[in-house]
Image (cartoon, rainbow, N blue to C red):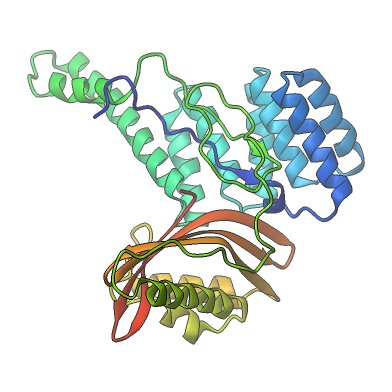
Amino acid sequence: MKHAAKQFRQLVALLLLATMGLTNSVRADDYADALQLMRAGKLAEAQTKADAFLSSKPRDPQMRFIKGVIQRDTGRLNEAISTFTKLTEDHPELPEPYNNLAVLYAGQSQFDKARVALEMAIRTSPSYATAHENLGDVYAKLASQAYNKALQLDGSNAGVPPKLALIRELFAPNVKPTAVAAAPATKPAPAPVTSPSPLPAQSAGPAPGTAASPGPLPTAGQEASAKEVEAAVLAWAEAWSKQDMNAYLGAYGKDFDPPGKQSRSDWETDRSNRITGKSRISVKVEKLVISGDGNTATAKFRQDYRANSLSQQSRKTLTLTKSAGRWLIVKETTGN
């Protein structure tokens, strides 16, 4: 363990403007203006900007999200909790508001509530890697409380102090978990591990729906292998977009490890229900980078997902292995 360095991995889910269904450039400017004021530390002005926007569009999820961040940064934690709670009620399909609730609860040492919020985030997005890690940290905090209680009840128990020492190594003293920073950018990246701040913008990438040149596969025939992996990833995205469940599920190998504790059959049923229930789906792969060795490859890219009224961008990593001449997915993670 890293001494005094490990803490709640910042519960900063990168909520991009597209995540909340951005529809036009005017609204993008409003979001960007509010975020710029936040970056400059002009929280009162950012609050005014958010309130003015919400006076005419009170249900806009992105500006409500930004408002919650402002409330958190100005110390109005109960108001921030209320804002994010209402977002989870109005948009239960989004994991980020649950993530923010977890951070706020954890900051108040309400670790049971933080656990419930993170479990909801994971239920909404089973491959949400950050939420899984944060849930582990919350469990560690709960363990610390239990071990302390055990010592209070039985101070002679020699087995408890070493366990407490390990947990104290895991978490730096006086560290508070931090919350989500909204960003008008397109680059998911972790925020600082101290105080939260909005993230820097990223230069424009390739046009939506196109893939960047894949990275090298350090084996013989690497160019052909990279193209094969790229083709497999794009075919997977196309099958998802077309709601072709045979092709979509067929893109996953027999060794695929479903996220969470789901069985393969439960995962397939869940994916079928989520995908075929949409009137339309669009999944685009952007900034694809491929690396690998032999019959194993990793594909990292930005995923642009749109379904009905939901629009969401996230970082996606697929691990693929070659079996019987086909590249098949054996692991899938989101947000790293």
